[in-house]
Length: 215
Length: 128
Image (cartoon, rainbow over all chains, first blue to last red; front, side, top):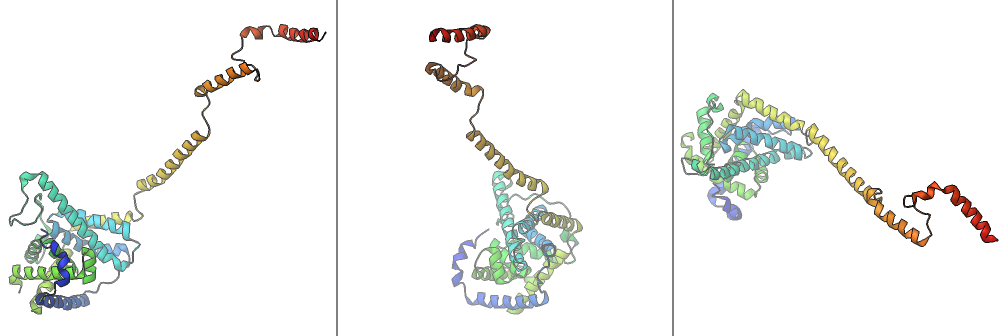
């Protein structure tokens, strides 16, 4: 699951040509995306949370693969942000919120892992033998994905993102999907900006391979 | 190289945002409720928790004050009788203190007139 975590210390020398090219492309795109989607400073905490709550749920859902857990994670992140960081400048709420949500997601994944060890008879790996938490109660409710216009495309993307190693997934979701800049992403992920760039370039490389028909 | 990457990123973001917009009403309502709950607790806690936060220091202060009071003024009563008796016994021996009424012979109080006469006449006879 964390196959790339030990790489954290090596990011200072992560500047191979492909990574640089990819990161310059990301920066260019980031500028374009920001131009088309200006993040205004929220007028109030209520407005900020209203703005991010649905996307936060989608992010948690992709990471946790379970609707109720995703709701719990978002709710907890909102509570913590309001309780501990209301007095911070509104410009800081974005990286703080996503950082809190990221940690909450990791906590829930760890808790599931422990639970899966206890309930060992359910096994600890998904069909790919990959990282996912072993014990995942089936969610039989009609998922919101079915109601999406581009539900299949979104499902494909979500599945591909879900297969990424955790740090790559976080970098991709925060930087590309959520549109945080490199510094904000680094702050939310609790790592250096170089690490963000490396994780992101690797994530994009994997996604390009997995989503070939998107080209 | 940039074009495919840009396309992937752009498409991924569009789908992500669209998925967020198209969230089912039940989940959206639950998120709204969660937000309101979070904002309602903005001052740190529920009314019950706030009351508890007020009561805890008050209770601690009361306990400390009570303990200080107990330490500064020794308890008098049944526990304090032993030292009192000891002082009284010592006083009788020394003759410096008035007799303890509780320890005196009850017959003494029945003949107070006699003892008063005796003290008066005894003094006058001694002076002769």
